[in-house]
Length: 280
Image (cartoon, rainbow, N blue to C red; front, side):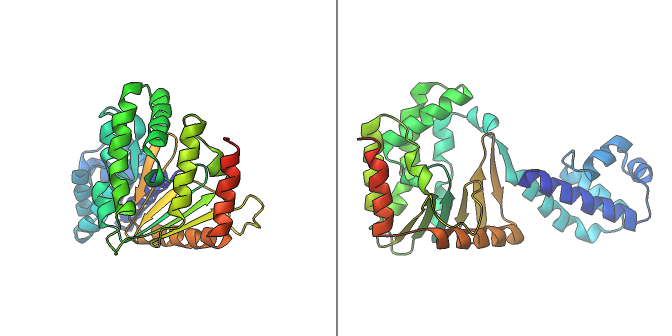
């Protein structure tokens, strides 16, 4: 079960508990709310999102109108957590890559974990173009969109390369991510050279988990922690976002374990140099 599905299921369980606490059967609530019994069942079992007006109706019938604001906030969290890439793609690749600028600009401490790729904010333009072209082929978008989309993506890199003195970045990647290249060998070497430059930036901590590391936590999906307010991540088909404090705390704990397995400084640069030799 994905995080969005789990969140929707949790909201459904909470609504079911409210109904049971009110002494109502599912059919009784459906009749009072003018819902179908099937709709009540689907909502309570996390199979259907509930609309905000329906939340108000549900809470009022159950005698807990004072919980409407809290329930609606939980519902909005579910909606925010799940975005289909196919739906986002309809707006075009440039639109997608231009998103998030305000979040990056407002963030003082960005923590990033990437198991299979260089973090996007660290892409060179040619590497970004080749990466976006690969995504375009998979999602059926015109390859011609890749270069302008890459330039839109590069705009957020200025927060890294033109530090204001209040921005700190902490990256942790798996060593294997250095071997995933986009574009030809020249493009990949340029990308790896830029990573070497990044390791020397005073406001950046760049760690690499060696392949022989004695792991204290499993490698899972990528995630980006913006301060301690929001966590974002990606799967093949969806983008995931959460602002729940309990989930953010979990990701912070995971990141702490991951960073302690990583090497930094000269040791990290040696791993980058070794990966670069693969493309010589």
